[in-house]
Amino acid sequence: MAVSKQDVLAALAKLSSPDGRALTDGRVLSDVVVSDGKVFFSLTVDAAAVKAWEPVRKRAEDAVRSLPGVQSALVALTAERAPGAARPTQAAQRAQPHARAAHPADKVQPGIPGVEAVIAVASGKGGVGKSTTAVNLALGLRDLGLKVGMLDADIYGPSLPKLLAVREKPQTIGGTRLKPIDRYGLSVMSIGFLIDEETPMIWRGPMVMSAITQMLRDVEWGNLDVMVVDMPPGTGDAQLTMAQQVPLKGAVIVSTPQDLALIDARRGVAMFKRVNVPVLGVVENMSYFLCPTCGTRSDIFGHGGAQKEAERLGVPFLGEVPLHMSIREKSDAGLPVVATVPDGDHARIYRDIAGKVLAQLRGGAGGRAAPRIVIEA
Ligand SMILES: Nc1ncnc2c1ncn2[C@@H]1O[C@H](COP(=O)(O)OP(=O)(O)OP(=O)(O)O)[C@@H](O)[C@H]1O
Ligand SMILES: [Mg+2]
Image (cartoon, rainbow, N blue to C red; front, side, top):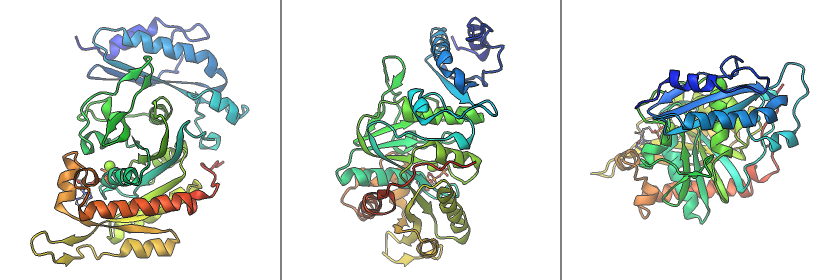
């Protein structure tokens, strides 16, 4: 029997908030997303009352889970600071991993226990090959001997289920924490593992942040040298907040060589600078076309633009990846080239890029004790 939103709301109406009101009365409840037996919603509460709310969050999750037809339930607690209220201290935020202040001014991001460095792969523009680059970069870092994880932060259009051909659901540990999926030696998590590919992702602001927070903090990542985060495309408010939400050591910007993409890449660099995240470098994707039959090289989009742009912006240039049928075919079939054709030219290119990223992390921009996240008023 399929569970409906009304069933979920009816179950939640029986639960009380810490102040005794029904959970559905207090205007704390976000929209309830029900998709194919999976239920997701958030409770937006005052940061000062988070401790009192945590058992309610748990009860809500348990109540929804016990409804017939529910396969999984994820209830996130999002903290909101009342105007003029004291800012929660960093220690308090650490003690309350679900507590997230709503305003960027309050974002003080603790690292993720066991994870050495979190890096973002981002682009100003969609469709430039960011996810393909992120996956192959992660595998390149794996080939350098690192323990690597991947987080798909593109909750509007998660790519990792497809790019890594993941069809299974993550297991839970102790009913609340999720185990990442292991693929090609990478520990991977994507909202797409929990919600079906065809489901349109409609998220409200606080839900976006709690989904990302939960994927960062409520997943048993274990010890990782690097976590590669596939960011949603663009440089709007949502991306900016996300850049602040994730404790980043650095960012890699992917661009194609066209002028328009480069303008967007520039915005991407500016966005990370604005939030004090070091830009580890720029990758030019679909840089040139090598004819598979005659070997002739064509610079379809006037290659080299990203390198010039990187120089102009004073950020490292990490390399160029050709536009190639096998990259597309392999990527879209869930067989990334670095894992499946490790001796090929493309794998070598991605490994070179990974080497440069690592050098940046260790000795370059990311090696400095850079502030992780900016605090903007
Ligand atoms: N170097 C390449 N050569 C050929 N095809 C590529 C290359 N890089 C990416 N692609 C293909 O381009 C398409 C878009 O790539 P991808 O999904 O990685 O982009 P994206 O920037 O993450 O997109 P979105 O903005 O939708 O998240 C995919 O079909 C992918 O296989
Ligand atoms: Mg993508």
